[in-house]
Image 1 (cartoon, rainbow, N blue to C red):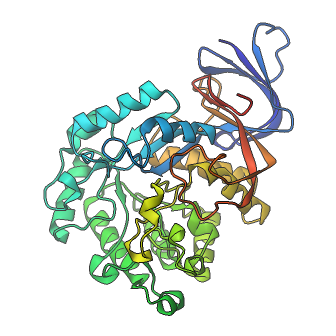
Image 2: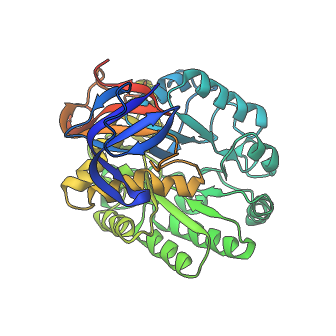
Amino acid sequence: MKLCIRGGRLIDPANQVDTITDIHISDGKVRHIGNDSSDTSAHIINAEGLIVCPGFVDLSVSLPEPGKQQKGSIFSETRAAAANGITSLCCQPDTAPVVDSASVATLIQDLALQSGFCNVWPIGALTKGLLGTQLSEMGALKDAGCIGMSNLRAPFENSRVLLRCLEYAASYNVTVFFNAVEHALANDGCVHEGSFATRLGLKGIPETAETVALTRDLLLIEQTGVRAHFGQLSCARSVELIADAQAKGLPVTADVCIHHLLATDDSIQGFNSLSHIQPPLRTETDRQGLIKGVQAGVINAICSHHQPHEMAAKMAPFEATEPGISSLDTLLSQGLQLVKDKTLELPQLIALLTTGPAQVAQLNAGSLSVGAMADMCIFDPNEHWQVSPATLKSNGHNTPLMGKSLQGRVRHTLLAGRQVFSASE
């Protein structure tokens, strides 16, 4: 099927393009950019007044299937991703069973392919069962389509196990995704260790729980030469450590989730469990440090860190609730808030949602070059909408933004030239 995206503002950071133009698509690929009056057989999508960009790439999404279908399914969450301009997502290995075998990785990809809404790239478990004791079969996981390995925030038995994991990963040229936390310092805390934690009587997690672990990890990365990515940084000091490592030439990248760029630990006032997340929301100083890291290019990507939960998971006493925010539905609108606040320019934001994460995950995505797959997002940056159960596409409604008015809405999403979402349908 031939398509013509007509008259939109094309922002393609990978090619340093920002112009009003037409895009012509056939056989699932971008065939021509610019006016082509001779092509009269194409289906027209009117994009006048809209932004046209590569489909978003999300580095951190928890898919509940297999094993946690009470929170959602691959069908429901990839449908939500498509409705919000995400055409490629990296799913975490914390399914049940864990993604520590080729069969589980293949199952996830098969279910995503059947759903047909977006590309799903599993991240495999760095250790069997995420238990931190035995190395997983990284070679088999890589062959099964895993784009990297992670132990998430699960502890290792000791640093020697981690060292062996990194050596093994380096031998397979596998990216290791870190979520830095020193559990002895975190001490089963649930919020940032600060004045709000003290006032509410909640056990706190100091920033050193992140920075101490991050320092150890960077030393082991330097020793092994493994390619590494640090996900969901939460502290200003962490940004400084990553910047130092990059300046030394270490193969290190980083991302931040959208919540940490917009919210702080004051969000937990009133024991608001919808703001219970790991790593925890931290101080305004940390938020500003993360913003500076994004602006300076130390942080390569912004992710949703989407974790859908059934509402019962958020209805216990704060420390007993499950951490996580459902955020696929709000990623674009929250990102546009950074543009509205003049924290970022629109092309910068789009780069952090497309080319940046695509390069981290080494995916052939995030670009609309002629000949590239036509994975595209077309959105209205000015449309207002209200967050409500009726407007959320994800099965997870666990968001502190419920009832709030946001700006910016996706109109169309294309996956390999096929329309997988249209706001008019």
